[in-house]
Length: 512
Image (cartoon, rainbow, N blue to C red; front, side):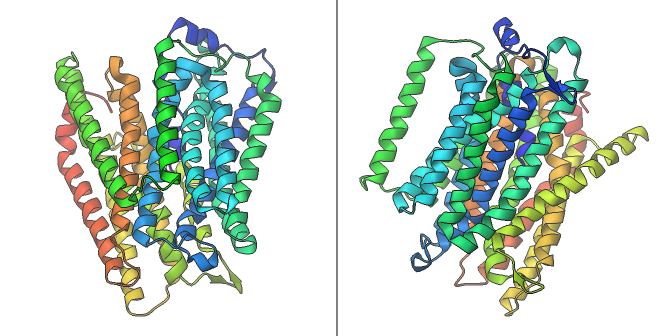
């Protein structure tokens, strides 16, 4: 479960102007448990959005690889994995655009509402039954999540006046974070069950209904948000021209694809996008370091971020297998009979958020305990342990895959152990990466640097889809080979980060 680490994205990226501060003024102070009443509005909006997002993810690849005679698309594993990677990574790429649209054009509130409507429509298209409608629904969802996800979090921050300090705001985000966790847990828990009982399209219909509830309650209680996110921080007429040009380009490309004029190879597109995002990220970091007018200390911190960003990309490349190859492994090779009840394969995705919710306070206490004793690990060291824990999880999957090769159906405990190690690795790397990026980023590039951090999640998603495509269900030797490859990448990255800990710490110039 990675989305809690995106909950401050647009707040950090927003332009700091007097207009923005005015827009951030809280509503007439009507409180709920000591917090602005509008927090409940955003809590339930985000909860339903995460319910729909992870609910769809829990059955997406299973639907795409299911035979057409069983209501699925009948796609090959390679294409299905590439599409999952494009879908997941696309939401992170479009979040950058969504933050820009809110900042420059329509404000956070309208961006959240528009995103919710797009997601509801997208989910309805997924449930419609048509193959063309299905892919159009995925496009709607990517655009909708890109609008809603960063801006709902930024609006939470704007509910609180800057003059009061950060303690109540931090507590508000902790409450908001609970909404993310609830949605992330119950989406993959219930959607696969509905899909099994009422068919694939029934499964996709449940997230549509959920997001509809989210939009309805947002409209009914929007007044409690007051001026928070009500207007853009700044407006420029040319920004509208750019937006309409983007919409027109998307509409034309979509029309050509749906009309059969333009054929898209998902694997080739994923490869191209991966290269483009990787080159963009590396080029922009080099531009910042070499031509950004930075001091020597700031330049060193940018080089430190390069190492952290590379490690982050490798981590997410392995982690995102949860939504692709791990889910296929659960369906095809795992004994899901529990006391006479056959658990849907997608329900295994609910294990990860359970571990995250349980272990987050444990890791928070661990860092505090180490810090009090002067033994706190540096950011690169925590990244290294995150990657090594990920490598350990791939060893578990490698052994499980070997058992499958010898004709065994394995226990769900193999996947459970894998998700446990994944969650531990995530808690070592992801929140630490978000915090480190905010501290290492040069002041004049703060928002753009946060955007680059989230590009590591997008690039990791694209690469995860490509690597999963190497698995062939008709040639089982490719299954342990996939997990062995991911082990070597994760282990090499972890060992390299351990070796680089001292020089990277020097480049960080005092930032802990």
